[in-house]
Image (cartoon, rainbow, N blue to C red; front, top):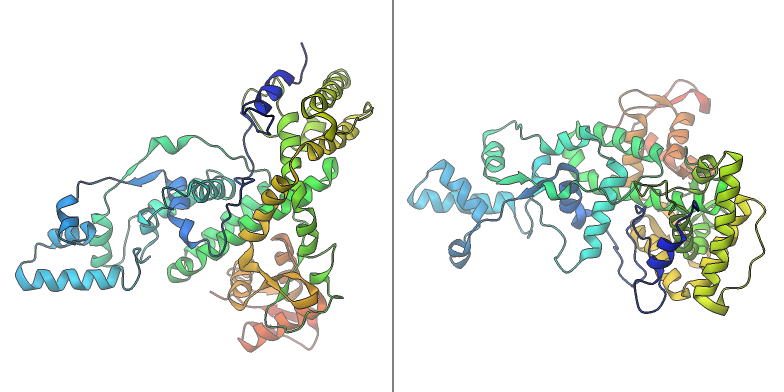
Length: 459
């Protein structure tokens, strides 16, 4: 019996009238599509769906047609009923609650972490946004119950908040239990949860910063995946490959700066982004083997390790060579003939090249374009230097806060903590960071030596 389930892979390709690429039953690592559907801008609109995928909580549907007809907000009505006020006082109370909870906004104000569960989800017709929220929750949190506990906690410090949270009629939704996405960068998941828990201890800052932190980490996750995939079996999935950022108040960024380079800045991601789609499908196809009963997504290094036993490795290699030939038969002459691979590493590259040729170029470009659109909050165009990864003041301070946490650290360690999170800075940007933190009184100077300067906790 062959190891690779070529029959299932072929059936996945024939789910439509003409051959089209499908990951089949293999778990996904990204939520992107090949159509022009992008998430651009702030992560804020996705937060409700994101949190409900963590907590398994959903709002109970109520019959509110009579209240709606009267223009009464069901939540405000419920709070008012619990206070049991009457007449003019009732009307004044409802006006106060309307302003306190909503102000000029359509969605409820975030006065407590539990209210994230009550935020409106993405529009029902925007399934893609919901997929992104679900993927971010399953990748970044990875079922860490410490995070779920923060959003499930209903404890408050004042009576009004207690009344509001008590009126939020929510229940656990068991239909959310199925995990669709698989985290392949556990070091980023652990860093995110560590940083998340730290800022959650500072309620106001937490509510303000959560969308930035989450979007930054998910954007970083996608970029890191692409960088690892591009290295095939040599990818190191245990740590970040830092990309160079600049600071958006630095002014002109010359082409000679690392943030503007083709190999160390965002240009490296942009140039290679169209290859993300074929990489995902190459590994999905190679993960479709009979022993993989759980449908796990295996990366190139994981496949090398899994098939390390010589006899098993040779059988798997033979299966891959046969599949590469069969793949060309399915997609025809646009896929060039490939020679027999003598080892797994070569087979990986040959199948990848075959799939890249077999895919529609527009589909590859659209899939890769998701990276730039999702990371739009961290990207700026600087004339002839092109698109550059940028940190604004708010993101720099957030990154510094989670890097330093509660104990002062040497300035060099701060830059190392940035790099652990995927952010590298050249000497020009480091100088600006030091000046900025010093102006804000976050630098503790012990001497004129750079190594003897410490960064103080921000929160």
